[in-house]
Length: 242
Image (spheres, rainbow, N blue to C red):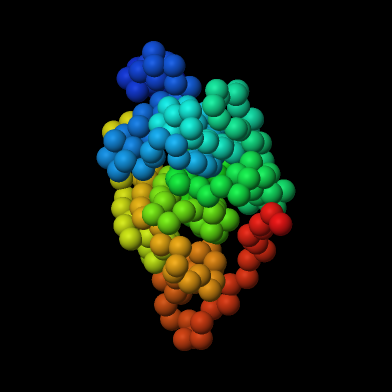
């Protein structure tokens, strides 16, 4: 099975195109195809690239924003520098990493957030899916308040339990929320990209997106529970630089 995957990987046309085009990963073409479809990034924009390793999406973002734009990438794993991008190493859900992002932004607002982030895979689909969904919610809880009016948020998610609840939790804050599968995604992959456009910052957010998501998911998985609203506790906090 491993040998079969390696052989297919070697024959992957997107991988060959990435190598010939100077991109670090085939995933660069996913962002290019998302951009071609939705026109998310403009010249001069400020872009936050979450889960930026190995740097392919940051390379594309730098090309799209031009010399006047700003690209900030963050990932747990360090990657080689990308000309024109600021790459940080850290966990975006940790206050220390959030403070570093805020420092690099220097009071600028974000136009576009792109995220190809993925949790450490355990091999247990239910656990991996749950972690992936809550990770997306956590990223949104930190970054949504930094996103400009009309801004966009795009993230990788996986088809399965919780996807509809996550979409429902996100929808109030954007005028358009769609799922999109780039051609560069492998046919065997369950990944899909959630593309959220036209951020509406005036919509009041009394509870976190993660709380809303977990509450909706709990109602779906436990429909026979008492009617009382479930209490969801989270240690996640949005920190702003004073």
